[in-house]
Figure 1 (cartoon, rainbow, N blue to C red):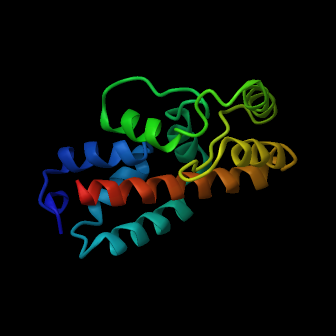
Figure 2: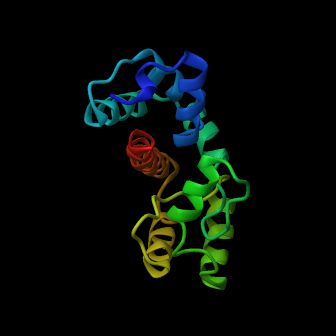
Length: 159
């Protein structure tokens, strides 16, 4: 596979933290090397995500900007985030209010794998998820983080 398999552990960890900032996830992914191909890499990621505790997920979640806000910085993760959220940037007051309502209810940013979604679809999802109980929402967060990481792993493999 690409240079990731041969990178020193610190370099591989840095690459992975751009995909998902959960140190536990990234560490588990590093020790799983070598990967035959990107499919095996994403499958391993999915397995690791299923085993992460909420604290591990929360660490990753805290690194994400509010949906609709422009990620700052020139690093790889910020660039990917800007691309992924392109449709939501400047989406308007309704999405801003949905973000505030969500954060008040759950205590963290609303996270969604926004790639390919319109601002209206993101707003509809935020409103739907506001009706979740905490356990259901935490599972949705896990799945959204998993999807974002999978997309970024493919980008990393293609780089």
